Length: 417
Ligand code: UD1
Image 1 (tube, rainbow, N blue to C red):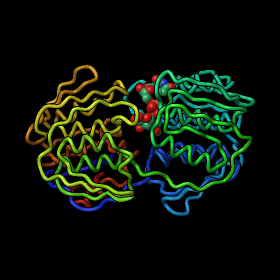
Image 2: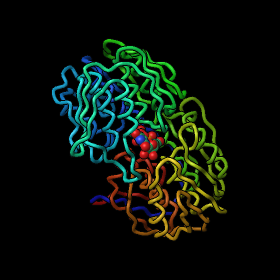
Image 3: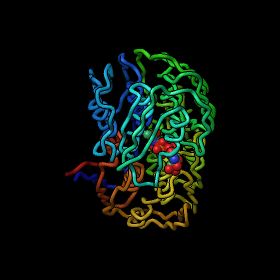
Image 4: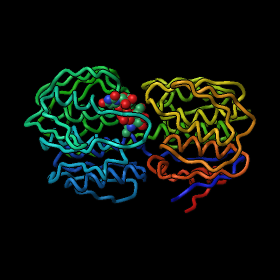
């Protein structure tokens, strides 16, 4: 099994090009199921979750061409097999995103209940409730969701909780439904806006993406389009936290500061000097970081996907901080691993109290989920001595060439088998 080996203690200096957003590409690939014509997607990152999604779409009958590593052309002219089997879904919860498009286009779908990160129960009841309101017949048997619908019809759906993929699934399904769908209490993440732009370019009629009410006027069919994926705001934030924790000066290209206002506010509070323009962010960290309290919540508040990285930063910051996780019930697993590196953290319910210490100690640790892995990489960069991170397949799901990008900034990091 592959591992990362990091010699800590180097500050970070230089430029990094940010990749396309994983969480935007996954629903965009599924949008290809909504049309017989082709969908071209640019700025696609090389990630394991993307490969998994492409294999899933391929076995449903989608033709896939990859002219370059960052471009994908998908043509779902015929959907021969509207099924997402357990083996393909178990590593990636986002596979549930095929449910809405398959039902809308093929009138049927059989999807294994999703797996993915072990960060909580993560049910899909809101996806199912919404599709039922649009006229779908849904049953769950032997770990599979079986869904059929002759023709989905528009409905008014009020989500009980704010869900990102739930919003995306219903938004895609509604594009081909009969009549108008109104989705209320929806997620406002920028990835949803990116998806709405692409669907509208395919001929859909969606208004309100980015606010908490989305209106979709169904159309009879969608057509061919080309779309360039937005930058990955979580990759961007991860590099910014790494440089704030390790010190130095970095320049991030192909990104957008407006996508992560809540994260930048916290980095400035920690002592980072940040400036930015349309597609770049520059960060300089001249001092030791100060502790920052934070509480995760749906966008535009502080993202749960950045919580673990800030935990590592707080481990060596001046002062004591409280981090409260409100989105997922089991997303503090990195705390145990950080404690193996001598971190001073106490967990109480869904909160962690972190008392900053001068240095972490390098140790052998294990990645437990995608963003927890990123927190261990940051911890390794700032620790004294060597850190070995096992099970980095979690990291490869969501970070393109992280060791290459960090090495270019001067970090001592390498992959070993
Ligand atoms: C997406 C992101 C993930 C991020 C998360 C929260 C993608 C591919 N993944 O995941 O990186 O961490 O948003 O920002 O975009 N819930 C229910 N019932 C449902 C759906 C969700 O109870 O039907 C709960 C979940 O268990 C969780 C909360 O709602 O506690 C938010 O989950 P959700 O927004 O759906 O996360 P994902 O879309 O899976």
